[in-house]
Image (cartoon, rainbow, N blue to C red; front, side, top):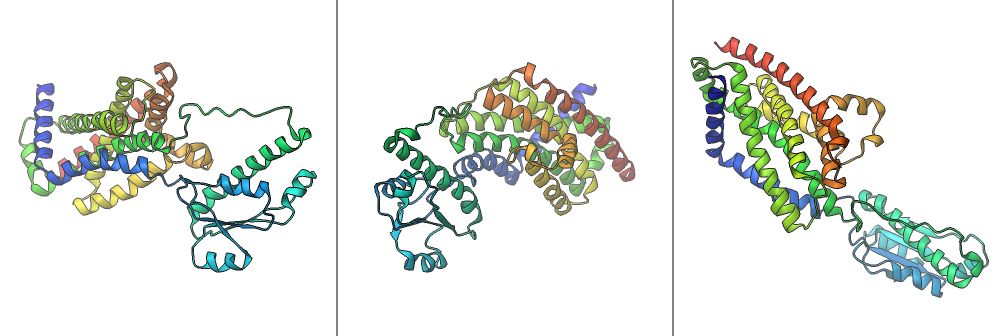
Length: 373
């Protein structure tokens, strides 16, 4: 009887979702256009940044540096003089202006350390932060290559051979698309489970459930399995047709193992959504609680920024969030092809956190129903 009631209540949730075009549109959007947009417009990537060069040296080395700054990271460099630099940056025509002084090549070949000046428009903060590193790397690489060919003494006995693993071409779409799928799985499960309960309270259908031979645990489990089914199906379609099909992003690991971890995460986040729904009195309040919950979860779980870069207290506190462990196992499986022997700890954490969240949500849900009875 327990299983049958939970099954029928879950079917009811699926029919209710089917009759909600706004929620269906949200699910379709985030797992298709949302994933594609995030993959093709990664903000950390430098694209077509306008750059100008004040070349006072006019030497083969300065020409080599200018020719190394090319699309797609930069626009073709504008060759300007000193008088054009400040007005051009004031007008926002250039984000970067590289000044190569007179006698630069001569000083390099003589073994001296001449200075290069890079002027950056810091009002374009993200381009300025990322682009200055790009310019420095490109310029130093060209100087080193030039010196090696011109002076035998400049040939170093050791050369660094860079090999990028898991993403050899350093394609931002590989990272953006998979991380977005991982984030959307957690986000949508909280929204769907919580919104379903709030909608029932607003429509008065919770009172109908109170007179039926069902328990709060059955109601919660029904919302959890129906929500998980919808999100898992949408995530599978997104990974298969958008990530692997349209974006041509390879998935290194086992999808069944990833979806097993996603199921544990959905169990925890669905319980979190129900807990928030018992706190909120209506849909606007639930939406405000969602903003206060989802944004920190996405920002601090390690999807966009490595957890190692965060303060120690934040790292410790976020160990209690299911999304932290889901991001860890998702990246390990999808990016690096890890097996269960590697990701068993995040699996165990998700099982424990999900059980605790479900127990807390069930207790809160029973109290809420008791006040309504």
